[in-house]
Length: 518
Image (cartoon, rainbow, N blue to C red; front, side):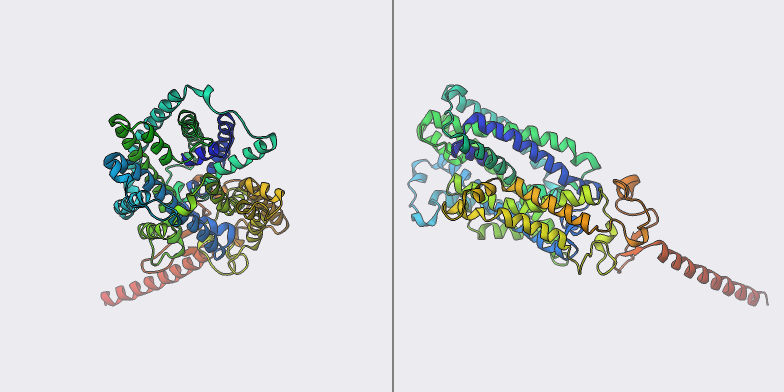
């Protein structure tokens, strides 16, 4: 909810903010579906599919970037959950809780929020020892409970404010409003930019190729619109009801405001349940969007020592180490934080979409993803695809300088700041076009050399259950040995060996039989 309350808090009127969410949600849905197909089609996670884009060695860096973003979001969402849990503790302990000895202002966090954060953080530790396949029921319960709670809170706030007609009007100039739209769309995409890139980590478990396609896109679009509607209408309504020049952008401040003005048994009970439900829901969201992808990413980087559960424990520790409350001091700073890594993820997504759908026409040769050395089509130059690396660096280099203007107004010119405010769109477009042009000049091989005579048709390696292999390929791993790719040539060699072995066995049997007769 904090993403969309932040749009109201920075001055966008409710109607304009809702328009932004429709466009932003549509782009999110398209991007999610686009990124999902390599996983659902070939059963490959992001660490494996990244090899086709960046090379077997180059992929390590881009998997690492995704893992770092997951660490940041792990800490931020855990802190957000802790602040909500602190509201629930206030409902229980009342004035004794609020009179707790305060921390100094330099700490950047209140003593109440710190206690709520620490208590909750240690309470959820057992969840990180559970493999995600065993948490399906918990996520189903979350979806069933969270929706009616969101509706009830929004309806109460809107009714209390006197309806939508009481919401604040537009106070922005036309220029500010236009760039506010682009910034708002960027915020929409920023909240899910890491999830877009790591879609293969989730869709590789899909039961069919299309399970991660349009059904996911439609459901994502609808649910995001509803969630944003509840979030922003609640923020705007509470601003009208309880005053203030700006809307409160985070949910825990909204709930504190309700308690400050309605300190009675009914309000305390209602706020307690809202705080606990949203706190738990946020933790589960972080598990799905950060812990599991991080576990998959770190497993891809260090498969000998790490598995998904161990990766979840690592991100649990690192999420606390980054001191996450420093990211959430204000709505403007929170949006700046979102934009700072959104650009990094957008550049990866642009290359991902171009490479898979345009350059390779949805063909991934699965064995080559695990074939290092010269001759492997994803080995490129010593394991690095410099075309993709250059396209990503260019997309980041053009957009990222605007970050300085987000922290210091006169540090950089207005055009750079505006480009940065819509960084996801610009970075995606730049990386996509750059990679496409370079791939047209230096065309990468789509099939291995021994299959170069086959025409490159759309989804050829995904049809008829091929799962990324040609009909005459065998990819197996004898006990105690590494994976071995067996091509027609190697199979022919093996058959010659079998024939010679058979002839020898026949000769031995003939000699043995004659000896027995004698």
